[in-house]
Image (cartoon, rainbow, N blue to C red):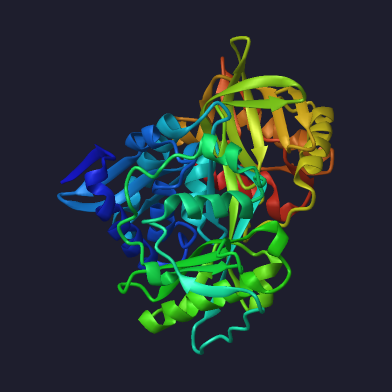
Length: 452
């Protein structure tokens, strides 16, 4: 029996187990593995009071799905085991409703994870320019350690000496070298990371016994990989090979424990020089309850439908309803596209000249690839057909549209999802047309979908 629970610390190990199980199914969620969760959970910047808003889904006592924050509200991970993928829409909706911030919610998706991306688009997420890549290195050999003179390398128990390690991170991640400022903001970790292995935490010290560089890996014997996180070198000690020494030392130690590969959620040139290769690529998708189009803010109400060119949403501004169409770039096996947003605009102008009854285009944002058009609040012909209701009475109007299109040298898309009837009048609600060909006219292609 499926049940929902909000996150509590007593579920910590089950979340780690779930992420291990999920990542064994495929590589779609490798950017969110158990080690990333552990690192995030006790990161000093993580808002601990927000953890309880994370959602967990159980089948009896087996954790099968989770909606997690990434340190703050506003970015999330959502995943579910493949046998329960029917729950994914529920998880995604929960994440947006409960884990967003004032700017909305962002989630990264593996570019090949088509099912989850499609559901995200249905729920109003849109692709952004943000992306991330994870890289992998094979641990089929021991990597050479060439430590510069004047430095020493050793394992380090960061759990017992958290302040020293956090001071290294403060400098290494470019927050400056003012220790008084660091101490003002430093907060001792509330609890230890349960899977921390001090033999995988490597530090490099200078001749004053000060920490100047570090690299750690996280490894669980139920997996075949080690996760590299974090890696840093203080500014004054960079570009002399200390980062390389730290990384190679920790992955060598992970190899001794049984890891076959090491992965890092980065494609920085530094890792490439060490031998890491790009493996998985992820794109960020974002959802806001509002969408700004040429300076006007529209509130998204619900998804109206998806076509081969875009997703259409019911949107409001000043309590007036419109259709907001967001162009997408998903592949289509049976249709070739050029510039979609320009094509929509050009086709609208062509159809408008034919006299075919269509919604008015209100606005168009070429950069964001969004069209705002008049909302025809009526019955979609395909819905009427599916409900077994007659549509024959609208065919004379359809024939008039077909005649007007042919006289203009055009075909429109006669599929019933593209037509709405309101107050007895038929509207063609798509902004698509093509050069006339007998093969794709109403008689030879479209009418069979109307006469059932």
